[in-house]
Length: 184
Image 1 (cartoon, helix red, strand yellow):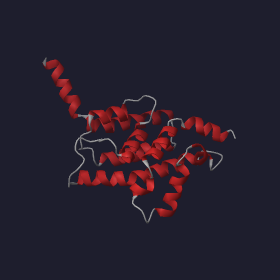
Image 2 (cartoon, helix red, strand yellow):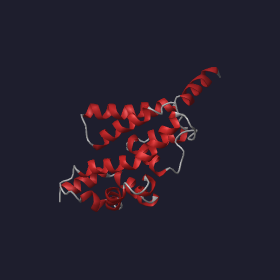
Image 3 (tube, one colour):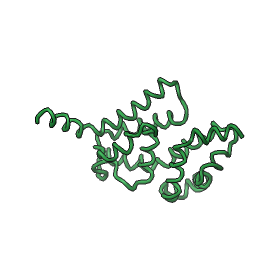
Image 4 (tube, one colour):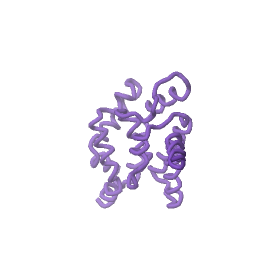
């Protein structure tokens, strides 16, 4: 019984560091492939952001959603979780100390990180408008950031949840979209 209980306790207490470990594994994968594209840069941003809130305990469900897919980028999944905000990532997400203040700041910057990521992806396409044409919701998102960033909160600028879901769903097949963009 002790043999089963000790690993279980260790696993349940290491989700926070495991999130960083998960992002670090993704970084290692890209380093081995010598890939330095948009997802790599997003991964670097996510590692930087998560390092400062690494003491917050990740829920087991969030860990599974973000880190268990072998086909999807943990960094992109984490960004989606931060932006859409319909499920908790951390066991406790409210408080007044630095960790919680920083978590809220990260959530506020998540929309900007998405725009930066999409811009980086778009820069890889031969047709500069190809990503906007192939991913519904990207063009209005870019326009809101370009014209309304100073006037609206980041929550309002990123748009509706349904539009964001479509953007993230399309980003799962970004390689096919880029191939299409570069073969026009």
